[in-house]
Image (cartoon, rainbow, N blue to C red; front, side, top):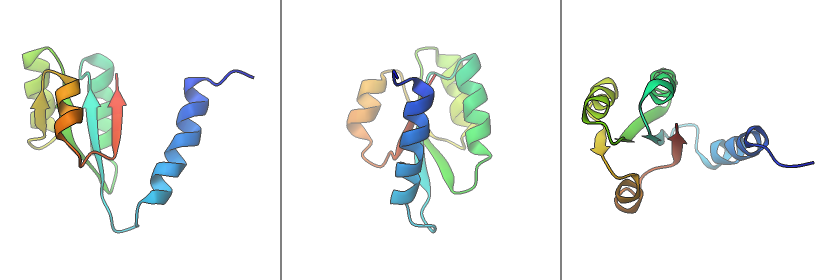
Length: 95
C-alpha cells in the first residue's frame, strides 16, 4: 500500500508529541500564509501548548497579517533562511 500524506502525518505527529514533556511548548513555523495557510495558522494558534514562532510567505501583506495574528512571530520571505536560522522550531506547517 502506498504511503499517503495522511499516513505520513498520522505516523509522524505522535512521534513528535511523545518527544515533548507535558510542560513544554511546541514551537511551530508556518510556510505559506495565504488562504489555506491562514486557516491552519488560526487553528494552530487556538491549540494549548503550541506557539507559532515564525511565518514565511512571499506576499508582504499576508506576512504582516500572519505575524500580527501570531503575536509578533518572526517573518521570512525565504523559508530556507527561516529553517537555517531558527533552531528552536519543533514542527513546520506547509500550505
